[in-house]
Image 1: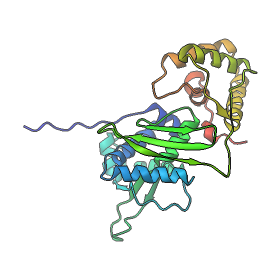
Image 2: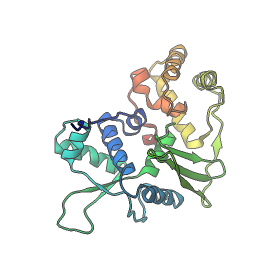
Image 3: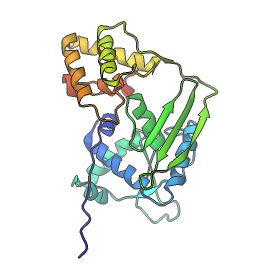
Image 4: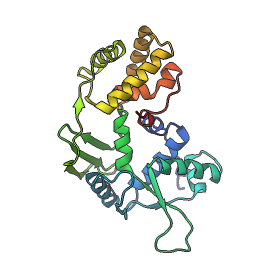
Length: 271
């Protein structure tokens, strides 16, 4: 007798932090799963590496020919066991599209086919996760201080890595700086980070520093004291998953969880 293949739905912290919602996080993870298990996944990943090397994220004139999958809303609802209406699934997918995490198109070969095709923008997802201190399972992504960006994907099936593409940004150089200690909250976080990680906090960009200080000011405006900030920081590190590198950006993204304060995601905060 054949065993029935059981369904699996995974909620990943990094995708919840990225999308701000567990439903969108589950749907995005499901699309990532199918993207990594389709035929020609190596060509899809190489195309994403090429997009990264040409800085075409999330849009631009880069024509993507690989990585397209077709899924009906009913299928996604059933596979993820969300049991939501097609309208609700479509609404969440539309928000993922608007955020740049996925793309959609109609079947380019058969005009009569009304099934929507979706494509996961892996490089952009990883790019945005990197901003808030997370990595996507199975991938490595680096913004090096000399302006070189690279992405590598490790196949889940055989553990082999698809060769990375690196590119030097000749038009704009990103400057990375040390997280300062001129604020008592920042200093507390750096000390606790070192206690748990036994190394210095990763360097950040000036834009990221502005976002960090903006959020810390909001915490102080809401009456958060240094001793409570220290307590919550310890709790954060004691339960830190392996996919989180401890960057303060990820901690501040979860302000609602630790301080019951709802502030837009770091990448949504503008000057």
